[in-house]
Length: 63
Image (cartoon, rainbow, N blue to C red; front, side):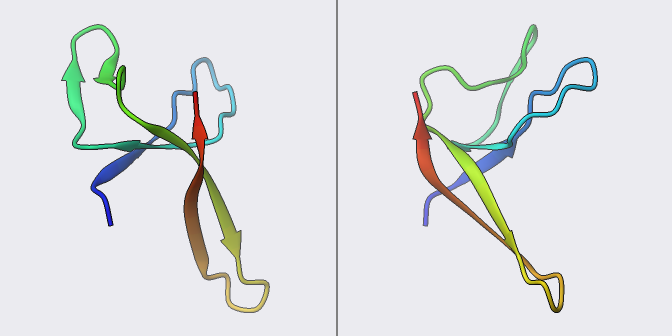
């Protein structure tokens, strides 16, 4: 397992697919959290129709 965090950069009430970013979050004065130069993956989440359990995966790299 690798350490990382999930980020969603929605501005002005826009909808975005969350992304998993490698490493620890680093604060940036202008951007909030710095992500440049870090590997990013689109997060896909599955939901059990019976109990509502959620399971998320980050398998698709984003360039």
